[in-house]
Image (cartoon, rainbow, N blue to C red; front, side, top):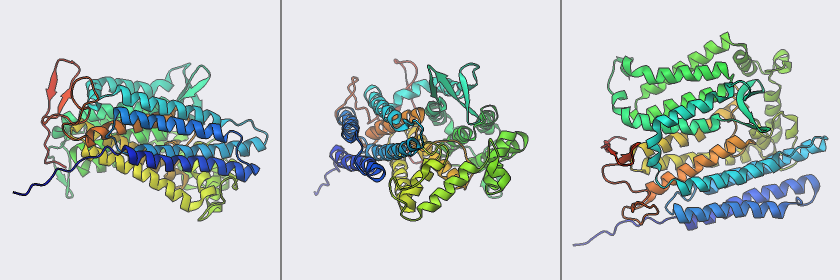
Length: 484
């Protein structure tokens, strides 16, 4: 009788190394081109910069070979490429602002945050042997996530920057704790929904062809709506509010596959945002700057005017299809060009073509995250990986939508690209978590373990056992494998 040999899963680290070489070439070349375009010579620190970026990236690659050999081979190169492009653009803006007499060192600081972020990603991969361990801390993560989000409201600790109270100051440094709060809340949502999804998916009344949930099951989404509105009102931060609520609704849909949750969630948030725009002046100013950006009164209003938005639009228009070229634009005319409006800066110097290429990188990153969610064998991992992939994709949509005037500006930053230590660290942690879960998803059954418990970090037993808070107790949850 003829037999069919089973498909052999290859670790993919050689492919990762090849893609990593390409990603590093993109980042280093962009950095060199900025120096050549602005000063006619290579940057003075080009060799040190290149050696540092190569050393950090290859070091993380070696950690992957050691601790997560079956992890997705595309996620790390894409993250390195985006980080490198962002560093080059921030360096370009530093040069422009220095030429105007300002002492700008954003690129130097961002390079330090990059090093710390890659090291932190390596630590996560080494210490987190099995992503299912995080489910032990479902409610601890909820408390930690909410605490991180409300931390800026603590008197004497929180700081108001650009009208939003989303920062804390510690030792002369500002930090945005909500960036890590979204990861903690994703852990909570995944742990909570994998247990309650059957209850939330039960049939309720049918209205206009849409199967609605039962009224008593609306509690979680109403609570998330109330918390997101509280963040919007108290911290004056539309971005964090939108991201927090969107994350919960997306993971709720992944868990139940009920379109009604999406419709209800969108309705609640749009209604809440419109109500807030009419009751609270700082929210109304955001909507006014969006709807009437080219009015003179709105353009010149301070604070909350549309000057930044309009300058960014003119900058991208100046770039056209192929851009002005690295170092040939005027991104420094846009306030906060290195952070909130780095997409407008890149759109001017790289044009629509370059901007679309960058967005394709984000699309690939989100696709690999969703592919990891599909491939991993346990319900918690599916929801958590799906939530992390959604955070990256949704944040990109919100940022690009705000810069292009599709939606109101939110104050969120572009993952890996924009200047900001807390954002960069959080996104490298997200990349590390996706890599760890993808190692579990791609690891073949019976593969040698990298952990100390004699079991592969990836392949869970047939029952999808999930560790609970007690190391000696195992909660066995049989998942319905026929559900999509």
